Length: 123
Image (tube, rainbow, N blue to C red; front, side, top):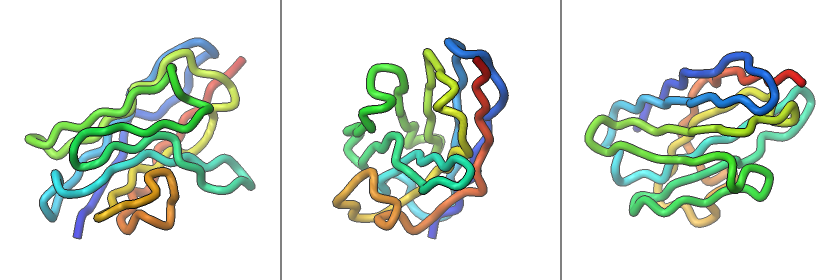
């Protein structure tokens, strides 16, 4: 099992930046695919970015070119650098871990979830 805890959310104006952090513990971090999802009020949980055990990233079209996902397998950390933020990026952001993930932005592929961190972007 893997336990994950997110941090780094907050409020920012449109065009600003935030960096989310996910600290993992438990099982061998490096063997898991990791991902960030987001969920707005009354909306489905959607994949934002993922990174597999080899370090290959996948991004949703809505954040491509603005967000960067990275991982530190030595310190068991996952990051999401978010630049050029827009009001539509406002959501609760969740860190997730999955083993042998095939569809990298599908939430059903991930078994372990954090409690989320809120990101609010004002216009």
